[in-house]
Structures are given as C-alpha cells and as structure tokens.
Length: 227
Image (tube, rainbow, N blue to C red):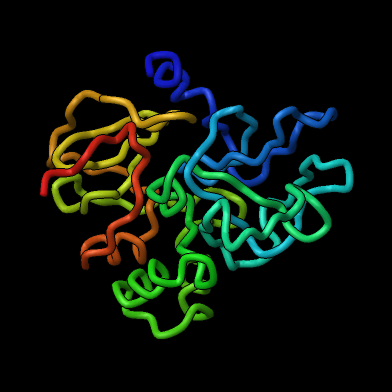
C-alpha cells in the first residue's frame, strides 16, 4: 500500500474540470476520476464505473476541453447482466472510480438502472422525488463553471463518508479516522482537529444522504467500520 499512498498528491491539478490531455493518447486512457472530479490516467483499478451523460472524448480517444456530456453524472457497476460496451467507443466516455465515496465526492450519484436499490436508497435519503430534479441540484453543487465547487464545513459536523480537501489533498472521514485518497487506495492520515473548518468536496445533497443513513461502498483499503 505504501507506493500507492505516496502518490496521493500527484493527480491534483490547478483547474480540475478544464485541463486538456497530452497531444498523444495516454495509455491507459485518461478515464480515472479523483475526488476533485479530475480525470487522469492510471493503471489502478477501482470498484465502480460511471458516465457523465454520453460521449465527450474525441475520435482518437483523447480529451479536449469537455469533461461531461450532460448533467447526468452517475456511478455504475462495472459489469451488469453480461452487457459489454467498448470503452471510449462511439456512445459513452466511461469513467472509473476507486469506490463510491470517491464518486460521490466528485459529484456523481448511483445509477438508477444497474444500481436500482442503491439509487432508491440515495434518492430517498436526499428527499428528492425524481432523478431529473436531483441531477439539476447536484450539477449546481459540484461545479462553479468548469472548476470544482467546494462547500465550507466543520469536521465535527460532517458524516462518515464525507470527503474534504486539506492542503490540496483529498481526505475522507471513516469511523472516527481520517483517510487520505490515492489512486489505488485509501491511506492512513494524521488526525485533524474536529473544530477545523474545511473545504468539503462532497456536494451538500450527498452529505445530506450520508447523514440520513445512505451507506456508500468503500474500497477495501478503508477498512471496516464498527458495527
């Protein structure tokens, strides 16, 4: 885990939602997502796939300035009912997340098709009645133009699963611990003063869902939460 944890700060860019890819197509593709909503290339695998509407990559499978096709940012199962789609083919720009906690921080929500039970639980916990209204709210909360929108919060008031940024690094709260995000794992981090006011990456709507009992899927590196 040490090597993966040492790479935590490498993927934080200065303009998370608007930077362009290198002239040559990256290998692997620039399709991993960090908690800031940035897309980057990494061989690390995650638990979930997702999309931001349809396709926004170019024919040569690189990225231009676009980072989404619509406001429907969802978090999906990587495999569902044997359906196989070409990655970055003609229909979708598929993205990949370390886990659901990462996806929520980036501004995604559970897919209503392949993760119907999770979507219903999340929707019910947010208080919204339909996906369209939910997606409009999340879109307003997750970005400020092309930049990542953050929200101020006191650590002691944040629920388990909230992700914050401290000195440019993404940190998650997990059962009284603080974990630092890396492309392939959550890593142990130094404790933070509960009274600290921080910039919260997880949108307020998802924070509300977490407070009301929604339980996102964590990567195994985060460890088990006490019963």
